[in-house]
Image (cartoon, rainbow, N blue to C red; front, top):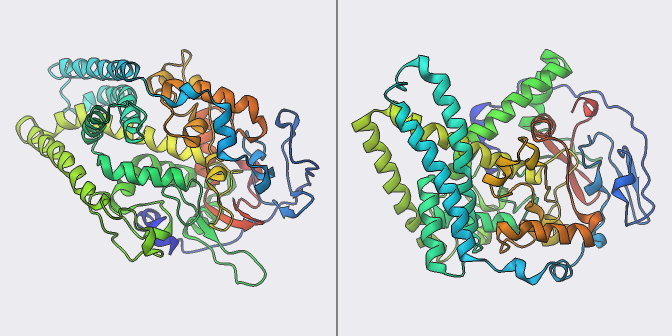
Length: 467
């Protein structure tokens, strides 16, 4: 079942809500799409029912992001073939440059090392065992974790085979960096490839698969834990404050608990593979589709190979805690580690989720449909200089190209992105909403999905204007 794997985290930490009362539905106007090719720049925010020559889909109760419902207008025949998109991207974009990759690695390693040296130098003046120094170490964690996220991105690039043609070098770099981040390298390499193959797939998706609600005339409506809890909070505190409370809960569960929960129990993954753990090769529960298990064949031995690196790092952290104290270990490693995890989940969540970005069941899914439902966002505007986007190797601002073909190195992703935008402007998703506002909207508005036409859309009846 979906709850077994996708939302075990919510059930574990929150439990189901005790009361549920539907929010009143707001009547919306209609938007009529007369053509397949749409000039997105001239669209007003669409609402209500979309009509095409083939079908009419009711989108009442769907809120809209800075995308203005762009992805909801697409039909299956609109999606280009993979070969057609690849043809417009310069061939050089698919070739890694080892020297350049090592140069970016040096930048991320130097930045992280400088931050760490600064933290070590501050230990004697600002001992982390004192609560008075907590604000300093929180700030240190935020800065160091933000810089170190660049190392995570480069390890991710190694896992995709986009770091170097020298496979031994690539594996050594990726395995080392990910192990230092407590990420089992080969296990994650496999699960992340599955994520790419099934982006926004309701059954086979590997991350951020939503809870679904049955909503039709033939079956009794079946609510979900998330939807019931959000409505309970709205009934208890009112719409504005209830949504704020729900948003805080969602932000905490995703940004703080989300990554370890995914690694340990496969939280937010689809139901097909059962409950999974990245440190053991076999599923923890019976999969809905046993043939789709996460670690088949030779990947089982690779899971154990990944565990060796994790065991070495965990042993070192335990020894550090014993001989130098857990406070020092948490100050210099634990805090930045949590910040890196938060960045990772932020990127993954916002790259594929928003209130008007749909998901698809297996009968309607295709690789290109999943890849082109990826969203590029303005991470270059998070700070006045675009420093964070640079330090993170533009992982969030060029992610559409990355999901089209993950062999494109990050330093060539902008060129690939520009080519896709130029040739397929109507099929490229870019939301200009500032990142904090986009995150807050997703926290509040992405609770459960319902089937509309050939897709699953986020259900926000009566609260559209509050998102």
